[in-house]
Amino acid sequence: MERLMPSAQRIGDLLRERRESVSVGEGSCGGLISAALVAVPGASGFYVAGAVLYTRPAFEEILREDRYELKGLRGSTEPFSLALARLTREKFRSTWAIGESGASGPSGNRYGDAAGHAALAVAGPVEKTRLLETGQDERAENMWRFAEAALSLFEEALAEAAS
Image: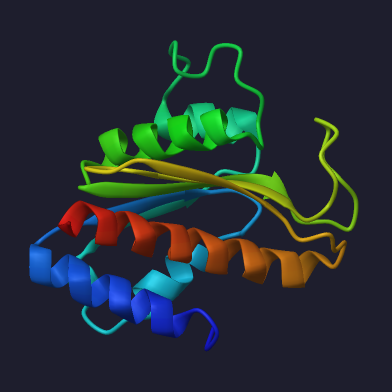
């Protein structure tokens, strides 16, 4: 967790200062993004909720969504992760949301993406997406790298929103 804490702390400080909130919809990170944010002292002042949505049926059940935003979207893509972030933000009524979908390994996913592939997104006053390809098939390391990249993308969005 130590490797995620500096970023999570900066995010928590900014969100509290701005009186903003965040929710998380993640898949292949397995809850690491949420865990890092909740580990920040005072997280109840900015963290609303998180869900590990590991399968499409879970995504649809938790978010109660089968709307147009998802029609034709393939998992582990930037459009899918952005739709996930938008729906998570709406569902939990947060200022911001992080969406993540990928293939942590040791093999790729059913869509043909190799292990180490993640699609990340932030929805809120600023929207950003990013693809990450680690080139590794080590599952746990990929999960940590995906979470680091998601928090970094969120920090970028927060900075952009402040300008």
